[in-house]
Length: 500
Ligand SMILES: *[C@@H]1O[C@H](CO)[C@@H](O)[C@H](O)[C@H]1NC(C)=O
Ligand SMILES: *[C@@H]1O[C@H](CO)[C@@H](O)[C@H](O)[C@H]1NC(C)=O
Ligand SMILES: *[C@@H]1O[C@H](CO)[C@@H](O)[C@H](O)[C@H]1NC(C)=O
Ligand SMILES: *[C@@H]1O[C@H](CO)[C@@H](O)[C@H](O)[C@H]1NC(C)=O
Ligand SMILES: *[C@@H]1O[C@H](CO)[C@@H](O)[C@H](O)[C@H]1NC(C)=O
Ligand SMILES: CC(=O)N[C@H]1CO[C@H](CO)[C@@H](O)[C@@H]1O
Image (tube, rainbow, N blue to C red; front, side):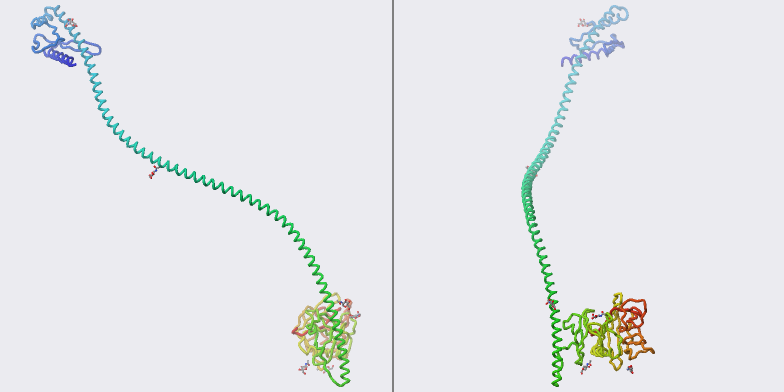
């Protein structure tokens, strides 16, 4: 290499020397793509440099002497074209040699350059490699760091994963336990349901059994109830018998009372005969209300004794109407008794207490003045319609005042206003006219009554029970109930203490 480089340098020096000494004559050679221009030297002015040493490869193409050389060149130009031609040929060949040499050189240079380039390249690669190595080292360290971090992360992940796995394991264990538990519970439940169904069956059986028993008991109960009803009937029957026997005993008592009465009367007669006076004590009822209070609840005829008197009076007691206890003053129901009577009869009374009768004005006076009485009048017409008139306070004066009437506190269904004569009306009969009419009401209307100017009432008039179109003015009259012609089938006047 060093040799080649020296060669190249020698040649280049040569070329330089020739170029300095050359004249301006050029020669062109085309070799391939490359073109070479050679400037040929002017030989007259130029001598080869004495210090110029040419290597063995470089040869001068001129003779060693300078003069012949210069003359040769002159000949070439002028006198000796043949020599010049040879010289030219020499030159040409030399040039060709040079060209070849150059080619070689070029090749060599190219080769060298290539190798150099390769070396350069190699160097560059080395440098790059170093850089790359450094970078790689860096990268390696970085990647190592990353790897470490990754490892850490992985470790952590693994840790987490293992933790999670552990947890999962625990959970699965827990789940297993739960499943076992649930299984146990399910078994328990099925066991319980079995037991329950068994109990239900037993319950049903028991229900069936007890239902039968219940049925039996119910039928028994029904039988007992029937028995009870029978017993009740029996009891009521017995009660009825007891009632009738009581009645029997009452009747007996009454009979006994009558007997006692008779005995006492006989005794009284005996005593009278003996001159001794004995007061009666056994009969002390003043009216029917006292009899009722004494426990006699059957309507009928009883004996009463008037206050401050020894007189015993038989009266009919109504024990049903409005609570009972009524003493009848007047009673008409079938027209069997004649009420066309005079003063005296009305004064003492007539008829029978059990049938139609008038109690008598003296008795009525004594009774209604012994205490406060209310008056109740019951009426029934031929068609069966019933009505009543009620007076809270009723009494009559004595005979010295012609039995004047006193009645107040009217109420009732037999007319809106009272049909009874006004207070103060005196009693009149066909033979004692005390009315306020110029006529004789008792004669016109018949019977005895408290006629005013004849007035709107007369319960002691003629008894005409059968309905008739004929208007009779002397019949039983209660004007404000049925007008002038009542045609009553029943009348009753009765008194009871106001404070009953
Ligand atoms: C997981 O990491 C925790 C702390 O972060 C540590 O206490 C524990 O021991 C680790 N577990 C495993 C299995 O590495
Ligand atoms: C009541 O007397 C009547 C006859 O007076 C009689 O037939 C009847 O059996 C008696 N009743 C009782 C319960 O004694
Ligand atoms: C009227 O009744 C009484 C008592 O009930 C009775 O004794 C009498 O025979 C009856 N007279 C007539 C005519 O119906
Ligand atoms: C009965 O007699 C007594 C005393 O003699 C007398 O105070 C009383 O008013 C008399 N009663 C009647 C209703 O006459
Ligand atoms: C009662 O009637 C008679 C006649 O019937 C009469 O003379 C007498 O004055 C009357 N008495 C009174 C208190 O009005
Ligand atoms: C002019 C000149 O020097 N020609 C030489 C070229 O090279 C060949 C051999 O390589 C020589 O024989 C010639 O004399």
